[in-house]
Length: 122
Image 1: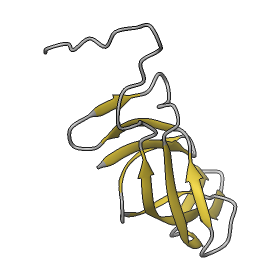
Image 2: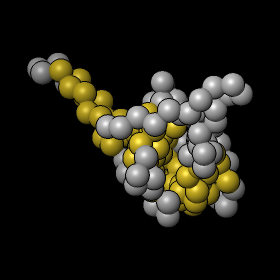
Image 3: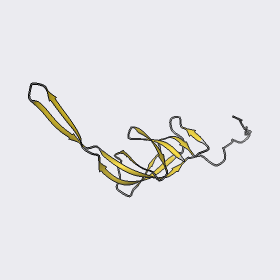
Image 4: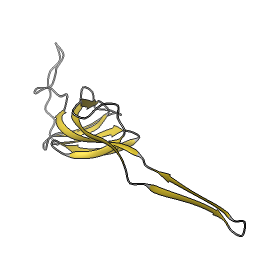
């Protein structure tokens, strides 16, 4: 089973038990966080694509650590003018471990009263 979630302006393909780095989230180590912006869910047999998100789908994860990435050096210079500037930047991130993927789909399709269920062959 896998899902595609959106967080921090990026999209991630996640499976249960997987650990990944996402943009910084509010919370401490050990806390639980849930992602409700689920774009796609697959359980191996059924594939559900959201428009834009899958209704009632939820991905639950636990925060493993809050840290900063390696330093990125930004060097500016202007030729022949003795102008040099060196800046460093460390982007904060959150490591999360995916605990559960809830598809939000019931076992049987919901059919309103008075309507007939129709099987469609592919």
